[in-house]
Image (cartoon, rainbow, N blue to C red; front, side, top):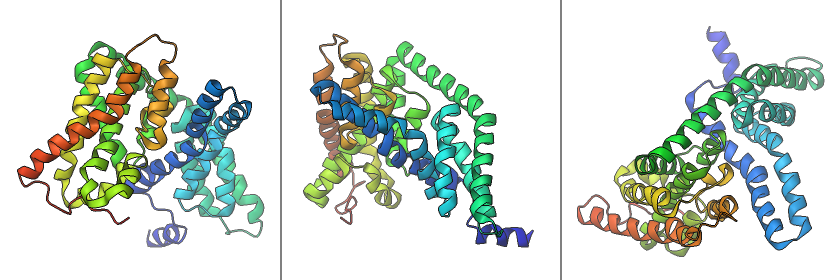
Length: 340
């Protein structure tokens, strides 16, 4: 047993929740942004401007989603070169057969097996990519359809519940997806895996915007304009270290999300596409996704909703709740300082 543990350690095969559900899932966000999400942005630009090159770029970017997922996940697992490149094929198969979750499962299995055999034989150039690709595609065929069906069914349950109970589900979806955005996992990947669109997608975006814009304005005194842009248009995940030191700084933006979520579902009836639901104001993907989902819907509340739910209310509400927390002594000067 000790020899096996030593071998796996030498091969950097670390079987843990941190490796597979945090590191790998977090890396998926980069793969998604470099393919599907950026493709969505260019697709919207091409549709509205009529510039053909934008539409062309969108098509190629979206078609590369599976490969980008495979490479990003394998990279997070510290795969050697041959395994990393072979993961592109595995990602394509996994995404085709089981969506992003299928790509995640297939690539994890393939990358770990590929790492185990890497440089262990004289014909490494054949064995390593062979093992990686064969195991990955078999895993995609075996696991992908079932996983995809489960995620789709669960996503449909959330979306149906949101339509039936827009107040309760607006609060729940907004708060949970917003929290996921700030945690070191990928809220974008979660929303895409669940195909979270419609009203549930709008509530998810509301929660993400509350976290990003909320932390940006709440920490403005400590981090100034650099912090405002880094968190408001980048990611609220930057505050994770400060949250570990003082979890109470998470209260203001989370309470803000619990207000903007039901406002999104019940007042403005905002909808989003899965690719934009879990992104918030990161690169303005969330608002662009709302526009993409709702264009031509005839909803006159779309633009006021985007302005208020994505930008104004997260800032105002977080500052209000933040002032109460500071007055109670829960948040002190320097608690939100970033090393920028």
